[in-house]
Length: 177
Image 1: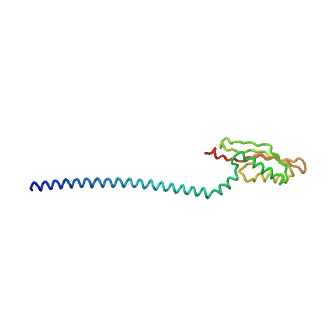
Image 2: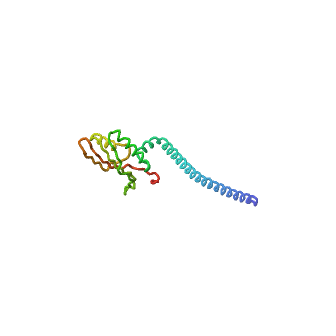
Image 3: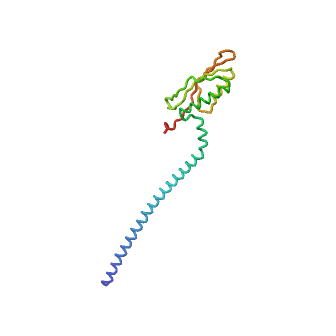
């Protein structure tokens, strides 16, 4: 082989090796960028899933507003609403035919659950049937409540007196946060 042929072969080999090296580097970069693209697609899918979950939660919150308002009626949201509750009971008493007196009103907190309850004691009198009916009304008031004690005694043949101690649950959203 002549000198110029050797030179040409060497240059061709160098150019071929350089081309293979550049091609290899480009293939490496393509795979590297592909991995990065896969990671970004995964992050984008996760973000879209979170956005969809957020939209679903917003829709549920909007759709369930009427149900939540209905449930909220069964609880006293704060202590000050006990006045409305007492007014409701005091309005019911004459309609049923009993004379009502509120003798105790206090806020109590359960030690184990830290749940707040308004404890109230009512004393009322009337005929036996009216007193029993009013006790049933108190038991079935549309609130989360519990009767702690009920006593009923005859004062005369036609006059009966009862004392009912009950607790009404108070919800405090600020305390639960």
